[in-house]
Image (cartoon, rainbow, N blue to C red; front, side, top):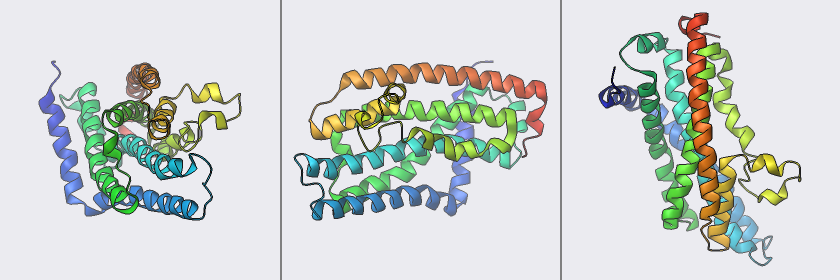
Length: 270
């Protein structure tokens, strides 16, 4: 059976109808990034006005890197959760067996989840980037090609995590659904989101450099503070992403086979 973009489009349309039919889903997608931006953004404004960041480069770092890090972190988090939420809705509705018995191939299903991740991301993050301009004068889009590179590296990592978590849900059911919300937050303290890698203890720094987001957030500080695009960092992060996505795809395939053997596809409850 050939790979079919029509089947991917059909799945995307299904999820788009779900979003359109539920305004609470759309509001939830927009709500959390907005709260994050306003909370941390106004904290940054207070610190600058109080002179807490008056050291050389301190004001520049506060004005750019904190807001930029918040926005990029939300892109990473919403990308992964958008992928997983579309998948987990099939478990909640007990519709997954029907999908897997249809002509839809696993690779096409994953392609649909990737597309929905981008749609959810656009709904949630685009308004927040506008709020960042209106409230704090920070324009993420002004980073240009650097932002495009940051986006690619972050999304590949988000989809790798989403694919791996979806495989675990296939094999072990909704008892593992907490991973959808919690796993990415394990990455946050190690991914140098709000501070340089050198802030971490020496023994943790090699682990930090194994995570693609680290290269993005270090690259962001390079652009905003040193006005240099660190293509070397982004290339390294992308190379790790390719490896992780391939590993996550292989793990998803193995977990799907394991679920079929164990008969858990029809028992996706707790």
